[in-house]
Length: 147
Image (tube, rainbow, N blue to C red):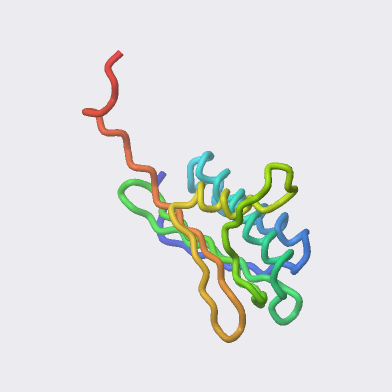
């Protein structure tokens, strides 16, 4: 799917409904631009990042969370970066070891498993958690099993 470089930025409430609003906006903006399997991964990661911002961080001024995504075309397919900016927390996001019976604690494992890479940037106003998705390499004909 051919695409040109594009970027979006939306503000959602620092409330559980913020994750739903962000998911729907992302799906609307990228449904015709990225493959469905990539879109599903993007939606899952964005929901997790916004949900974490709402549960664990302070809001930005105005009681909001800023959500942004950027699409960059490449020969192999689109490269996508998601960013969620909030007012920060006393401790930054980190992958935890969750007990099998725990109701939470697995979200950043999902982010790390679906995204190519992820990280956190802090400044005087808060923190930005980002996740990047590189296109899957095209299958090489010389590596496809015969059959």
